[in-house]
Amino acid sequence: MESTKRGTRGGPDDPRQSWGTKEQYEEVGARLTDGGSLNSLTDWSTGGVLSHAAGLTDDGWRVVDVWESEEAFQRFGEVIGPILQEVGFPGEPKLFPLHNFVK
Image (cartoon, rainbow, N blue to C red; front, side, top):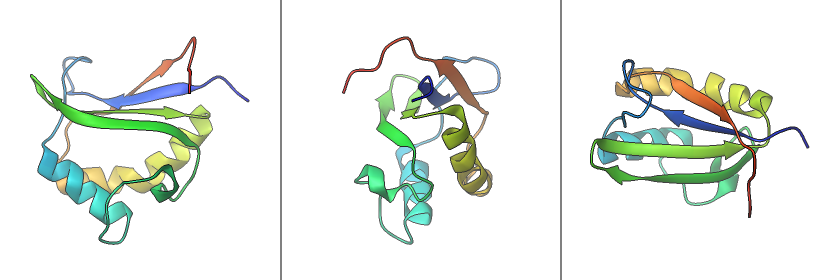
């Protein structure tokens, strides 16, 4: 397996900045799942996601995904990118290589 990548979205000025709201997150999930929500890793239509976590931080909503490869993340980016723009999410995803990922 290729080295695992973590993708997270932050604001344009601060890579630690969280993004969006719970309502925006749920709207994106509904659009990705034809009206459902993201409840299982099989809900990602492009495959390749190993882990997904989302929740409220002091700065707003934060999403962290772990992908099997950068290519898998890029495939998903082609699907979710237009949705994020329509919903109004700021910033671009930040990619970080992982040293270790334990399931």
